[in-house]
Image (cartoon, rainbow, N blue to C red; front, side, top):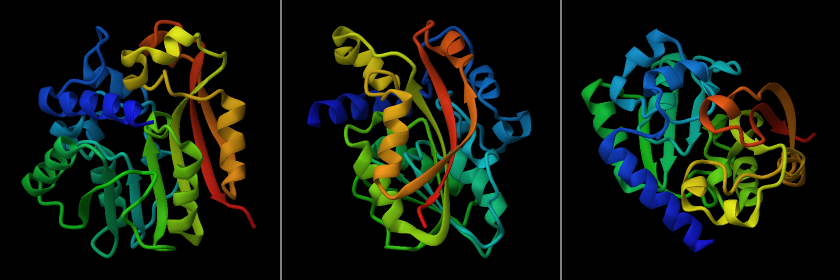
Length: 243
């Protein structure tokens, strides 16, 4: 578990410093457009776009004025800044990331573009530095698959969500099991594949954590555009508390 986190942390620290995520031929702008971001959204805070992610969670569901939004694995802050415009002055957005370099970059972006209702905290998504039942909406973009303890992540999400809270997640899930070699490959681990679960196992963990998942969309094309044909997809979910 510690080895996985070390691999992920080292990789994303490097991305924060170089400003480049994907090692594929496409530009980070093209990658972001492919996964659901508009030109205007990308122009909002250009420095926050790392060419990472597998969807646009702020576009999946309703974020209302006055909401308190939490972004799991906030990176350089792109989804937090988009959510900030939706919650308005009376709302608040909190980004949590375990990589110091990413948190530093996000804070600089917030200061440069005068985002007053956005805060970035250093922390792990398996042990959120967030009060219980304080969050209206959780968003997460291609991050939970990086965690070695996904059930703990979803249990933490349940802990911090308000009773009528909701969660919008874009994440990579497998459609076929990986080989042992692929599971150990550092590039695949950092690239959202090596630690990913089979789709049915991912959905089962959400249910086990006391949450209910509704599939909004499944993007299988991302396998060809970003992952060299590996049997996977980007799963877009709306998640609520089990009643």
